Image 1 (cartoon, one colour):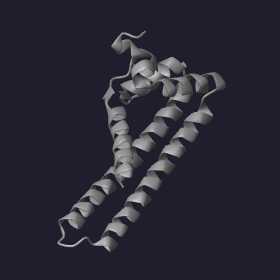
Image 2 (cartoon, rainbow, N blue to C red; image 1 turned 90 degrees about the vertical axis):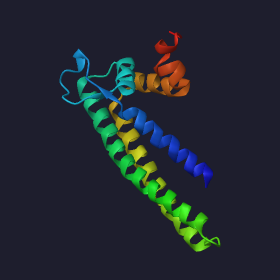
Image 3 (cartoon, one colour; image 1 turned 30 degrees about the vertical axis):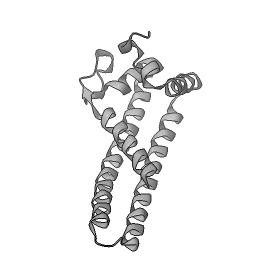
Image 4 (cartoon, rainbow, N blue to C red; image 1 turned 135 degrees about the vertical axis):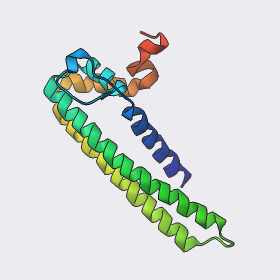
Length: 152
């Protein structure tokens, strides 16, 4: 249970961090909406074309929307868990129902992440996929934002 909650919290945190937006830089002038700094930085490393960026940002927005919906469901799960704990006796049936709802929400979130990753994977060429995989493997501190920490 706590592993699921921790994993969910991490995933929601990732979406929250990705939501932080700023005005686009000049070479993204064709996009009217704000950009996530982290995603913008990754796209700069990948040297993506405007068409690729459009697909990637659309996939990220869709994932963000579905994650927001899941976040609301997880809030309900937390409230239900608190009700189970608050009771005089442990209501195992209610706890099992809470776990079932939580598992279904987590499965939907996994599906949304898989869909977004599939769209991004299909739009990138082999070189860009290698760069992206290296960035993911190195992690945010040493890969994506290394310049902020003096590692580049």
